[in-house]
Amino acid sequence: MTPWRASLAVYSDRRVLLILPMGFASGLPLLLTFSTLSAWLASAGVSRSAIGAFALVGTPYALKFAWSPLIDRLAPPLPLGRRRGWGVAIQLALIVAILAMGLCDPKRDLAVMGIIALIVAFLSASQDIVIDAWRVEILAPDQQGPGAAMIQTGYRIAMLAAGAGALIIAARAGWFAAYATMAALLVVGLVGFLFGPEPPVPVEVPPAARVRGWEALRTWLATAVEGPFADFMRRPLWPLILLSVLGYKMGEAMAGVMSMPLYVSLGFSLEEIAAVSKLVGFFATIVGAILGGLVAARLGVMRALILCGLLQSAGNLFYVLQAIGGHRLDYLALCVAAENITGAMAGAALVAYLSNLCSPAFTATQYALLSSLSAVGRTLVASSGGVMADRLGWVSFFMLTTVVTIPALLLLIWIARKDVAASERDATTVPASTAS
Image 1: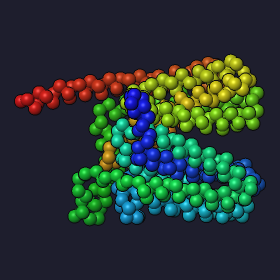
Image 2 (image 1 turned 90 degrees about the vertical axis):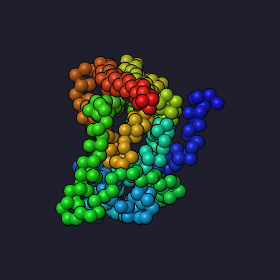
Image 3 (image 1 turned 180 degrees about the vertical axis):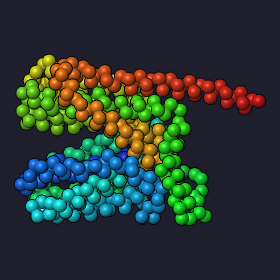
Image 4 (image 1 turned 120 degrees about the vertical axis):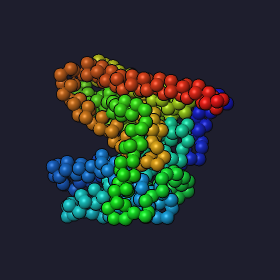
C-alpha cells in the first residue's frame, strides 16, 4: 500500500467514521435559527426589522467558551460518561426545543418564538462544545486531520438538509413538518453518542472534597476556569500560537464577505449565483475537507496547516481572475470551486491543529476558546472588507486578501522550526541522561 493510500485508509477507521454523524448533528440546528427561520418569518409577513433582530439569537455561538468549563468539569445529567452523558442530554433537550419552535405561530407567538430560538441556539452551541471535545479525545493524533474532514463534511450535509431540505418540506407540508423532520434527524447524533466510545477521564489532581463553602467554590473556579488558561500558557511560544490562529483565516474571510457583492457587480443574477454556489460549492467543500484531512494524515498537522494555508491564500487569486474576466459562468464556477476547495482544506487542517493544542484535562474549554479566537479574527477583519474594496477596487482588494495571511503563515513556519529544534534537543539529551 502506497503512503497516500495508507493515509486514505484512515477514513475507514470506525472512530473516524463516527465523526460524520456527529458533524451532521452539529450543523443541523444552525440554519433553523438563521436563514431557514428568516424565510419562515418573511413568509408569515413579519417585518424586516423584526427579522433582523432575530439574528441576535446566534449570540450563544460566539460566547460558548463562557460555559464550556461547566461542561468540562460538572457531572453530566445522564450516567453515560463525562462526554456521552452531556451529549445525549443536550441532544434530547435540543430535539424538544426544535419541536416546540415548530409549533409556534410567528403571527401570534413572535416573542415566544424568539425565546425558543435562543434556547435552540444555546443548546446547539453547547452540543458543539461536547462534540468537539469528544472528537478530540477519541481520536489519535494522526487521526485528527481525517476527523476534522469528517466533522466538516457532516456539517455541510446538515446545512444542506436544514436549508434547502427544510424549505422544500415547508413548501409541501408546512413549517411544523419541516422542523419536526429536522428534530427527527438529530437522532443521528444520539445514535453516534450511544454507540460511540466514551473517552477516558484524564488523571488529574483529586478534587478538594474535604473543603466546603467559599473555599470549595474558589478551588473549583481555580481548576475549571483558571486551569485551562494556565495550562495553555505553559506551552512554549503560546502568544505566537494565538496570533497565528487569529490571522490564519483572515484572507479567506475578507474575500468571502465580498464575494457576493463582486458577483452582483459583474451582472450575475441571483439565480446564477445560487445555482453555481449550491451545486459546485457543496461538492467542492466536501472534496476540500477530505483532501485537507488526507494531507494532514500524510504530511503531519503542522506541514498540512502551512501547505493548506498557502493554497487558501492562492485560491483568492481566482477572484482576481473573475474581476478581470467579468460576467462569465465558467469563471464563476471555477472561482467558487477554488475558493471552497482551498478554504475547506485549510479549515480541516486548522481544526486538526487546534485539536492537537488541547490538553486532555481541559479539552472542551480550550477548544472552545481557540475556535472562538479564530472566529474573532475572521469577523474583525472581514467587517472592514467593504471599505477596503471601495478604496482599492476589486482587483487590488482581492490581491490584498492573498497576502494578508502571510504573517500568520510565517509565524507557523517559525513555530514549526522551533518545535523541530526542541525535539532534536530532547532526542540528544535523553540518551545522555540514561547513559549517566
